[in-house]
Image (cartoon, rainbow, N blue to C red):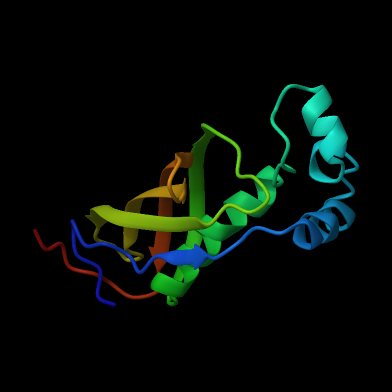
Length: 140
């Protein structure tokens, strides 16, 4: 993809967040928080009855989408807000839009990014700056 201002990045969809993935993420992150592992704990906290996906796992969806859409780029910065949880059973989609191209070298691309829980709304919203190895001309 040759990035242009306003272009949409190819989205990344996770069909279903499952408990087995959350258990693995808990081990990898050394995160024993029971909201990722125990539905009774989620209920006791008043957060519903489904396990809650780890924030870093949600963020990984956005990072994967960016690097798949712009394989020659290197992620330089990410500025996001967590606005909701992603729950066990949710389908999520990471997406992005090119907002600015800063010619280089090295060229940088500013993207608006989000992770949406399909049918519910945003989980993460923010922006990412990626650096390209070559020079990109600004196109409007």
